[in-house]
Image (tube, rainbow, N blue to C red; front, side, top):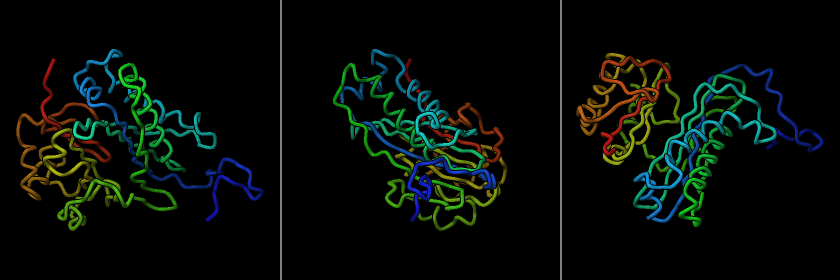
Length: 268
């Protein structure tokens, strides 16, 4: 296998992608930062001295993805169409799981942008928490999925996010695991916080053609028809956002939308 960033003389160079046809490309990366249980509790309670840790780390990750070409010498400057950085506080294992999704329509992939977003988000978490815990560790940095490009799609075989049998077996009807390619237009669905554990799912991709109505109500109806565990989404206390904007069941869905379901937010 030849490394594309080396020329015939073994010298590093930037790959010329000018002749490639622009296609839609997407990558998801993840990592985690472990810390003392007391530190994680302070983070959860908003009690750290530097303020809103998660919000700051999210902005840092998004900004880093956009500036990857300034950090990694042979990366191209890319016009990213979407960057999301998400966090999950794992109280049982004393860590914060960080994931990033990057997407564009272009001539080269976005794996490095997703990995850079996760890396900088984790570093920002360390910076925001180091006043109370210098023993934190950043680990498990990896590419989870990659879609598009000449080399084809990739999904890490050891990914902990398992596909339920009804999802894997019925992909022709529209439900596929994140990282698989939807046929036609689709939306990405995420289940956050305790919903993730209760439903046994983290991310799904749903074909818009599989929905009776292309709105949140239609999405809930489809999921409920496939597995009764998704009936919890019909509870009025369960919140929903599309592209990080709060919505109700009437909200319309379009190609590449990101839908997030999460339990009620409590506290001051």
